[in-house]
Length: 379
Ligand SMILES: [Zn+2]
Figure (tube, rainbow, N blue to C red):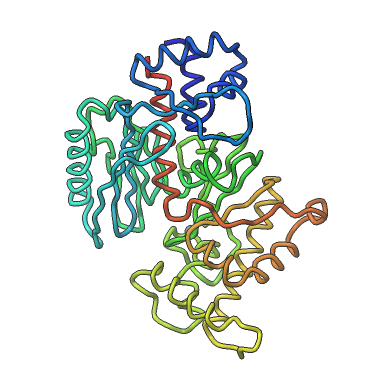
């Protein structure tokens, strides 16, 4: 398989349904060469040609390029604090099948066995088609695929146990992978320096520069939640004081409301934000939920300003509870954000927008990471 074949597969992966003519233009090859490449990739069961949807305009009929119905699949896995999901993902990002389950404070061996069973089921169902696996986890992942997930108490876990003899194995942090997905197929497509922030139990994220996600020397970059934008009186589970993550999550809301720290801070925060949303009409008086949500939102906006100043980001996407906060109290976030921006950014503040992929971001990113590693091997 030539470099050009791989480049064509990459184009179809990014834009399934691209016309053959547009794909040729993107590759910088002539019509004849494109037809030849497409024929070769069709014979290799990687692509099929389909009729283009009628455009209404006159002209020669064109064909579109689609993933082959018997082509390779990447198995994408997302493990969260309370659930797991496995999807079989085609070239182009469409999910052909999904299996999922819940776990509650479970030990790693139990979660591992459940996910391994789901992967085996999909490998049986699709025979030779699954060629790669990508895993999203709520923790930091080393370059040798070892996981530290303090929130769920999993230490030095070997993620390759999920599919030990996989041809292609990739894994990453959920917020980092959500950032990757957001830049490939979401709200950050086309940004040159995109900052993605995701609030769940704490705050994570990543910087994507020209489509490349910055993961750091050990794969642990993007731990923005542990920058000291929070209250110096509050100690974070990481050991430091004043962390930003514990000033914008469910625990922060509980502290502001004088309630005990919730066992499930994500569900708790959603409930408080929903209660605040119901009372955010201008006529409503001050209610504790709304005041707490506004405080957290201002802390979020101020920290985003600091990161935009430091990174010169041109777009900020917010996922998880960050998107809920942006929908509920946008003024508190943007006021604190603009106040914290250097004057060089004030004339045209980089937009803060909700992540387009929502809760699907981490698994979509896991699929993207696996496909990126698999594409060059489709020889
Ligand atoms: Zn911390």
